[in-house]
Length: 103
Image 1: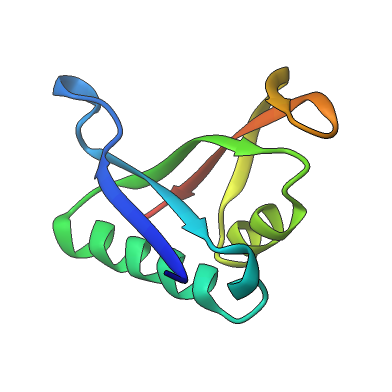
Image 2: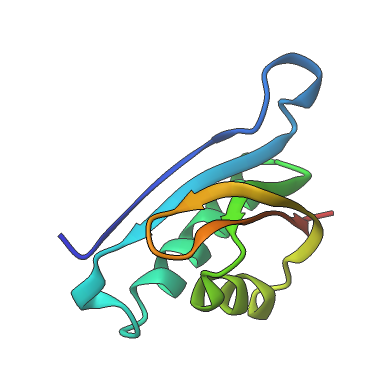
């Protein structure tokens, strides 16, 4: 496996017009464009399905490759919850909420 993604409405009911998803790229496939392909597919799916925006609820702040990728696709960081993720090597690090407006 090189990567996987799932896509869904961020919240039910009144929040169901905002998409979300989870992306994961295998360590040996990083830097090969798999993450960009998965993220681009998620954005295309959200647009085709009629979502107003995409919200990633938990982007690990020290995952600089993911942060750079999402920013290059137009996502912005709305905020960071300090220490919200317990990284196995770096200890408690921040989690970003990232947003892409599709309107």
